[in-house]
Image 1: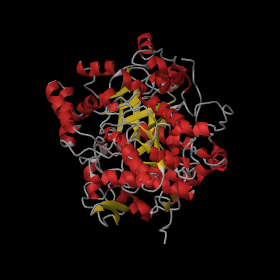
Image 2: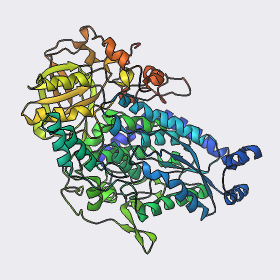
Image 3: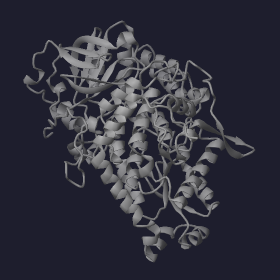
Image 4: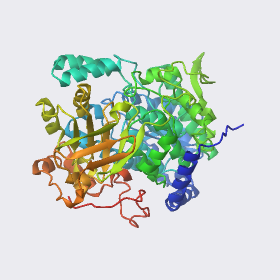
Amino acid sequence: MALNPPLNPVVAEVTVRIIERSRATRADYLRRMDAARDSGAGRAKLSCANWAHAFAGQTIADKLTAMDGSKPNVGVVTAYNDMLSAHQPFERFPEVIRKAVREVGATAQVAGGTPAMCDGVTQGRPGMELSLFSRDAIAMATGVALTHDAFDSAMMLGVCDKIVPGLFMGALAFGHLPVVFAPAGPMPSGIPNAEKARVRAEYAQGLVDRTTLLASEIGSYHSPGTCTFYGTANSNQMMMEIAGLHLPSTAFVHPETGLRDALTAAAAKRAVELARSGEGRMADVVSEKTIVNMIVALLATGGSTNHAIHLVAMARAAGVLIDWTDMDQLSSATPLLARVYPNGSADVNAFQAAGGTAFVTRELVRAGILHNDVTTIMGQGMEAYFQEPCLIDGELVWRDTVEDSLDLDILRPASNPFQKDGGLRLVQGDLGRAVIKVSAVKPENRIVEAPAAVFETQEDALQAFKDGKLNRDVVLVLRFQGPKANGMPELHSLSPALSVLQDKGFKVAFVTDGRMSGASGKTPAAIHVSPEALAGGPLAHVRDGDIIRLDAEAGVLTTVGVADLTARPLAVRSTANAEGSSWGYGRELFGAFRHVVSTAEQGASVCFALPTGVGGHTDTPPNPNFVDRTVDA
């Protein structure tokens, strides 16, 4: 019997609003997916020459299976490279998948690969200005891979920051197919996160040398698998579980284990089962209720602020329109169940050992915070996701998760959460709309009112820190960091400096139209300020010394004592900053992206940035208070 407790009224209200707002775009999306499904299996439409090309490089056995004409063919889209520790294990996955589907009379092919850049490598470097845009490039690459139209279902191999959102968006363009996501899992735990943070802070103050810092970082990031802190990559995995696109409890199994390969093989066989049954197509799995569940999962675990952007674009790919007000209201009703670094000292391995995703899913369903009347790749409802896999005598079996958390310092039940609301809030005022992650910020640091110190580049801000010019109560404003300006890079390299200032006893806050990081930490940071400065947003009017108030408790981001901020002339972006973000490190190849990209609250998307009525898009900005002040950059 399905578990259907009463739904939390706030969750119900937000869901209804999203359904109503999305009625036209969702109906348009489903109409297109129905038409694609009704046109028949792709392999049945391919000519003999088309089909021969598709299998020319395959084994004789696979060619004979394909020639049958009735056996499913699984298209695999992989983000493999060995530059990302989390993606290095995907090198062996295609053969695991091919072997598994042969056992059930089907075939599988790597349909294509996607870019997969590592934000950990590009932090503070020019390449970070391509990071957010890589998400839409990945979506496009996924579309190219699947457009061969030779597949009955698909598998997505990806883990990290922009890659899973991009695969998700691209796969939804083929939502008439069942799609299964298969991750690689986290690396084993390295040095404690508190020790890593301590060394970074000491290096920022010049107290230790680069050799000491490098040794610490290598101790943290040391083997194949996802980085073990709860940043964007691991937030991705939590959301794919809650979305019902993984096999249950797949996210946090280590890559170099028999269990990981068994789960990958089982995922491949599930893709074949769904192709044969005609059930579980991605368009049905990813509904308005699913998107709400994904937001709730992010909030309940203190996940990455990057998803305040990604989720908007991901939802739009399914015809679902959401905004930051939706996320803020859901946060008010979502209990915080997990403390994982940077919201605590534990890593995802300890989180999984304490009960992990299965425990979180069950608790949220029982509490009426998650919709249970949803479709997943496992069938109807979320009950299958209350289970965990294990190997017994070499066989994959499933068992119920623990009834009680095994470590209440890491994971708690909904009846006894770390706090009664989630980790993400909307702040707004005469400086625009922004998001702030408060789950790692102590209550006494959540309200800051101080003079602004305004910068255009991370380098200038860090130099001011090194020169001692920020040793005071200060709101550091970093503008011209939005998607139109320079691709909206993460600004995580500022985190150690901000933490040092706060630890010295100063009231410190960070305000920017850029991104912070999946590792947003203990310093209050109002990020993704929208509209961005280059589009005429309010940050372009702020001056050094203006008093800024950031109140995460009341949801306020405003100047104090400025009668009419927008009456001031717009700041002119420096020529060096503008030119420096336009070329080099591949940035010149993305000039068109910077010109047409949508706002942060609209998902900072190129794929869904066309004006109303162009290219079949009929949506309006989801935020009713949105004002398009875009200027030609």
